[in-house]
Image (tube, rainbow, N blue to C red):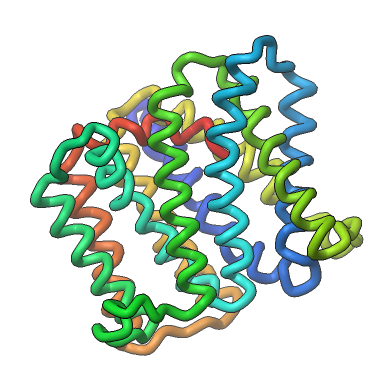
Length: 295
């Protein structure tokens, strides 16, 4: 029984991560995207800073750098959810698993493996089917705005994971995470103040903010941190790839979103591409060990 608990913990984290797509999709209908990000991450930052305050300049430097990638990811993802469905957002965001080894190869100035290239090609084809974009439109870069923003989010999340692989081990987990969350909240607040007037949360907004700010941004990662301390990064990554599947499934059940056969085939190819990369490039996904310090 004890041997299965870590797997259950990481799977539980994946379910919580996947559930946020539906929550945020509903939340941005009543609250502007940047304001939602501001209050979500400010709640998490305040809690973590109460537990432990960052003690040196290095953690601030590395935390702000990593937090900047995180901000771009969540800003793009949340803004994209305004014009794309929660199910598509979940599946497209899952492509970050493929992008990590590609970015690692770039950072190391080496060629990505055949499995990585195969997975990337499969993922792009699946993305085209899911978003109902033709091959000629893929070549021309003519994705719809919400889908394109979500691709940008996946790229930013992958960049964040790679950045953490070089910095996270040098810092205390709570301190480093607190700086990242404060960075996201600060950047989002500036953008929201300029574009949205930074509105205060209403009573309706409190539940999704508490869920995403505390239960997911803090609670889910505690599950993942503990679970990953008892298994390999590659195995944890495979379990975490349940996130887009859960996200799409909950969107169908809760929001009533439905995909046609072509879109379902695209979704299957995206999930398949993630598994191709996770199973075949275990050495390249070591960066996933540090994902537990993200938002």
